[in-house]
Image (cartoon, rainbow, N blue to C red; front, top):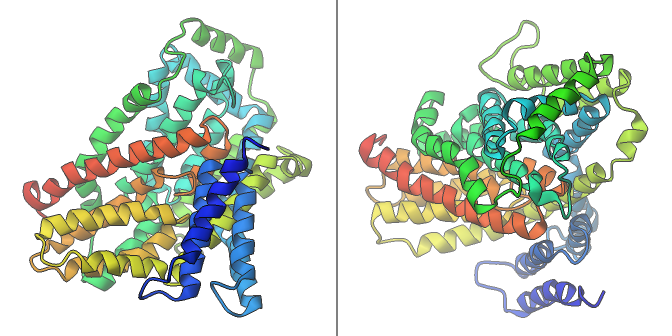
Length: 485
């Protein structure tokens, strides 16, 4: 307890110090005091003196009971609990249940063994296999939580065990490397296609409404492609250098994996059922929420990504792939449910009290008179890094994109189309910066292979790499080499 005293005192002191500072002009006292609570929660999440879910619960309890977001006591508590009705929260929970099904049926082990047999001689080869798996799924899976948290993670979770790598002291053997490659990859692919991240479509609607511009699927893809290709090609290697695995190669393990597959024998009925349910989930994720696909009697958008997860979980229970007690016993699933639900509510509160709009207007007021490309770079970077205040890409898109876009449009000679495209391209890659920045982040964080300190530091390092690539490649590509407006 003594060792944790400073970790407890730090967030409390930050909260107190901010609360004692006079309210800045343009903000209400409630909004400023709410920000003080939020800042204390973020520092506590970084230091983690107690479990993250408990920190989030304390944060919404304080803000809700002090009525910073809404003066009405009932409405204030309703706001505090609103995160538990968020679809992405339940999608993340479903990803953990998928992991139970993969593990209990044996399908996850079988697929992991096959990957190790084919590519396991070199850890770097496994990194590229994980990257390619996400890339193949990305164009047709509008939810990166479903794609990475619900499909990729449950499979690759079985690989580290084959190398004697588990959460804790042995995580760095190989598990940490594979998990970070998978997570960072899905952030890149989320920016690569309109259809690879749910908020992308909402962002295009805001661009059309605010800037009167239409950006097609092809324009999006070709616009980000010069940024995506080098990032994807180098990512497994960059992680290999920056966050190296202890096991670099193993000639014996692939042979052992082949022998283990032989011992497993033919696929069992539960493995077949689990595989069928996963295929069904992927197909429904692709077809069910794709506006370009219309089915007889069902039309378009006939099932939400979270609805798919609930259907598959029901199927897993009905066909005895998992038991209800298995789900009840998954502490990780319930822990991440509480943690992410509270963070979604806390981040939403920043928008509700007007703090995010105030920050955006303050930044924009200091940019008048600068060159258009300079303003473009500053606003895109601001849009990227302000995501530290958000636990939802959708909320970030709705709250900040209209303000930043309108600010840029007001600058004389601003190349508006290029500016708008850079903003929307940044949505996926900004998900790498924190353990709560995008749907799959809590899944990988709660997996235990990447420590709290490593997740925050790697998030900053790769966030800087991603935004630097967007600026260094994307800006000249869209404004000079292949100008779009």
